[in-house]
Amino acid sequence: MKKRIIGLLCVGVLAVGMLAGCGGSGGGDAAAPAASAGGEEQTAAVENTGETYTLIVHQHDPEQSATGQFLNAWAAAVEEASGGQLDIQVMHGGTMGGPKDTVDMIKNGTCDIGWGLQSFFPDTFPVTEVFQLPGLDISRATQGSAAIWEFWNTTDYMDDEYADFHVLFLHTNCQSPISTTDTKLTSISDMAGMNVRANSGPPTMFVQNVGANPTPCPINDLYSNLDKGEMQACITDWHAISSFKLDETIGYYLDENVGVSTYFLMMNKQKYDSLPDDLKKVLDDVSANSAQYTEAWDAVEDETKAAVADKCYKFDDAGRAELEEAFQKTTDDWIAAMNDKGYDGQAIYDKAVECIENAAK
Image 1: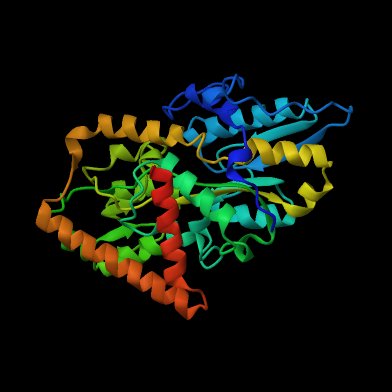
Image 2: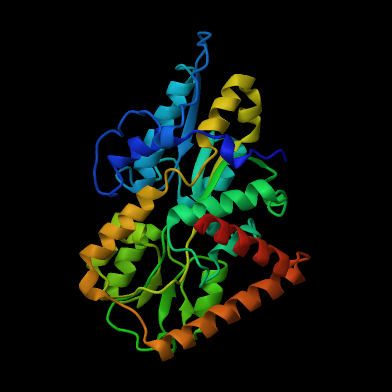
């Protein structure tokens, strides 16, 4: 798979468009793309030949979320750079299907482009899971997104798991606290016996390692399950807490570096191949830098944490040491599991850590 060089792209046009929605709570249309940040030039618009190509985008988050606001701004930037030849129609809020339908919808052409979480598709994106490991030194969505994008562009570790798609970009979100309804954790062992909603892969492994019960639950049902007491905790990001109003059901937030989730924006390969080369380039150039727009997720994290600051806490040194032991066990277990699948788990982990460190510079 031919990879794009990170420095090629000029997606600063999206940053201004995202500012209107970076709080994750506003409605209305995304701002029109404006001059790019950092002095970069916008992607030059191609000459309009008169033919228009409509592309349908499926995503499951609410339109007023950071995801919805970004995709609206991204669509506007693509349309402008294509000289109006690409008509991007973003279908928000899962109106075309559920979160776990996205991969099949992209493959079978139900949608042309889909945004979603790799963790909703167990065993489909095994290498990508490395960025979900707990305790990685990822402090912001912008950093995590730059790291996973460097990993994608500089290695072939993930090529096989994305071979059926055309990848437009990969990114991470903001950090996920351990949110509990009624219990303030004094140590991670207090989670033993709790029903905990966490994504598949490393988050589920972590929940098992602390003696809790991983309890699958669609994000749209999480509010009611927490409210009814069917679940006592969840590991989900600040953006989801804001977008799905989970703060109304949560009593305490353990604000430790538990982990981030990974996301994709992928296109049906046949649809991509059917486009003229100049329009393919527009899609690739506008999409190629995932880190530029994820400031929106960081803004939501800051805003949401500020709103619930009186419910946030951290462990003392002893509690932190116990937590880090659980992090390390999860990492060791994941590396061993990857080795069993025929991968070099340690090499994948080491490269991910290198990319994370590079993104922090």
